[in-house]
Image (cartoon, rainbow over all chains, first blue to last red; front, side, top):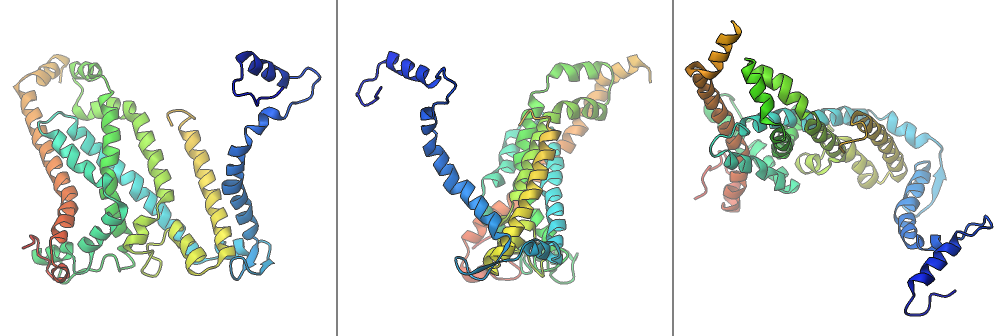
Length: 311
Length: 65
């Protein structure tokens, strides 16, 4: 039959659909044609670059599109024997802890204090949430001003007599990563606070009332009621945090761009430098696949931790 | 402490006092957090009102002219 008539009756469609389930055991390919546009987009923009990058990771590339040489696993070996790569790995781990654990603890503290229903607590809630909507570049540059050698923080500490002379933060090898993390924590506390606050408000009051009658202390209530019942909310915040910390790039790139001497380098910034600053595309591709492997393992762990639910 | 005295403690004036001291702690935590969070936001606004020469001055002017 044809579908060329401008009005296709329902019976014609059902007849046609029925004909695709032919009885002679042969599969009708016609329905699959409808998948072609979506699959074509998927193939061109996802599958092809993926395979091409995978092949690139085994080649030595001088200029992109130019001559290449197959070198086997040499690119992978080069990356894994690069001390800066390992430095970046450790920094990424520290960065994740600073981006996930610290703001969650602070966010929990703030959520609990705001949840006591103090008058004006909505004002505090709003103020603490504002940094979440500040663009990352703006936040990075503002913290550069504040933490800089001639910034307000140094001026303040010198004025108080806590420091004899301005301290180097973003251009010191020990303090550059904590400096970036200050901005990250500032930016994320409000986000976690709101999620945890929603979790807190879903805990029924009856449980606390019962605990109060049993003469439990505030700490006991927090420890034995609030924390267990907040577990889903805390898990969600932790998962979002871990995912965001793997994807993090601009946080470090704006403030220190990985420096000084790679002291604040994280995996994503070093990846960018190898591929697009030093134009080592082959090694960059290998680096990309190593990152892909790390992400895959982390994703597996996260899915197992969450029991496949909640997220 | 017996169970009944615990119950009394939770409901009596002693309990009220406990709540008010907790309230002070709550306010302190919130104010410190709000100031720490709001300062960079203030600094963005303050810097935006300064002359480009004034931005680099050390020690920085807390209030723009």
